[in-house]
Image (cartoon, rainbow, N blue to C red; front, side, top):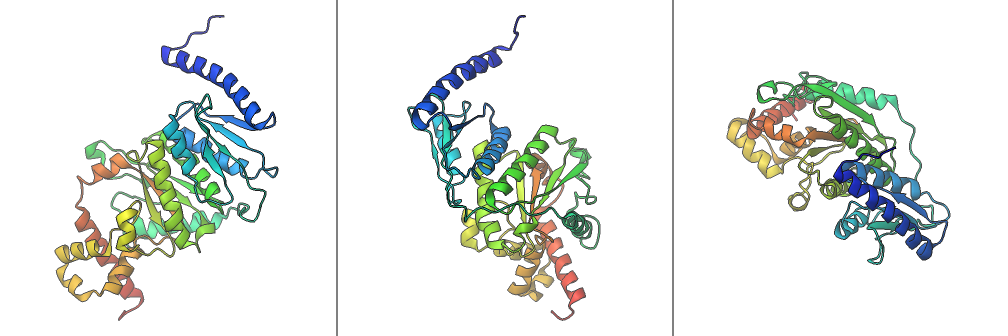
Length: 345
């Protein structure tokens, strides 16, 4: 039988075959025969998916033995950046493989201390129900209609056919994650599916993680910076846009937004400027406290939620709308809604 492969695939076929043999020798000599070795000859979303699944799985290694994640498609610098991604997540100890390694990769030595580990929660179907209900009331043409491009809880990217974008289903995911590794694993599984299926099949992702409903500080200060760093590491920051929602959402301080704008609502100063431009009378009547509430309310969902969108669709949508006008309109709608449920406040 003759093996026919494209030149590119031939290169990686023989590189992997030789690299695997050399890596086995290197690992067995450095750490012993029982060392776990995972070979990942992919990159971008597929690599991130495998990496976080590997971290979640191997972090439960009760023997504390070293585990190796080999990345032949990455440079040494990229492997170093990969090792830094989960930096600070206890009880992990992750380092890039030494320069003497024949192939780039990372090594993890799980802690024998199980105090920082948590089991996944039980998936609750009510999470999906309440999230869909909120989408129909808040984003779609319902009580508030905050997103002109969302038709319902199941269909988005509407009203964009004139610029070559067709409506497509919203992919709903319920995460049972209770720690960072589990959540990142769930996020990258969903993101990988979205990228693999394409815009015609998936318009966006709504990933709800109810175990984080009472952890707003961790949600914005740990999870979203981690999402940003992993997207940058995968080279996909210009392909996917990620938006932060949470039951206790608050607009972060300007000092935080200056460093971590990723996924968040615009600053209070920006919202005030836009409201003053398009709704000057309402702006004059609106206190800073009420404006902050309205801005935050646009990002308050029933559960901790990660919304993933196609970046190029976001850019295309800018040609169909004025961001400042849309935000001013949405602020006015939220303020009117607040007055209707609590008159005088």
